[in-house]
Image (tube, rainbow, N blue to C red):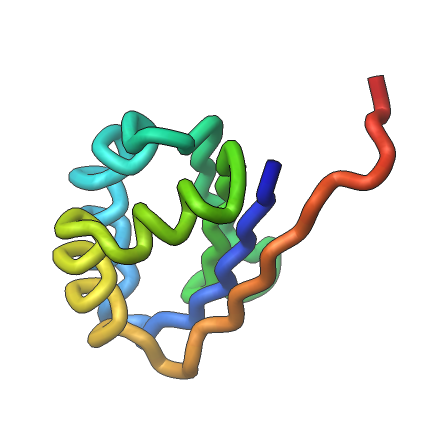
Length: 98
């Protein structure tokens, strides 16, 4: 399992445009093979900062998505709205909390 967190800082005047892109694409991403979870988080103190939190079956599924036509559509539309470069991290769960 891979947990992917991408923190994105948007130009303030472009936040609504980003939210529309996310709304239009979230179900397509969630139904992509290997995607087990997708969530959008808003920064508690900065209204133009968001993070996506996604869980993938494994890194190869994440990479297939990142090389897909869907990602090739969504990412360029999103990228042009940034006020700063995104910061992405991938994690694996070491200890189960169940």
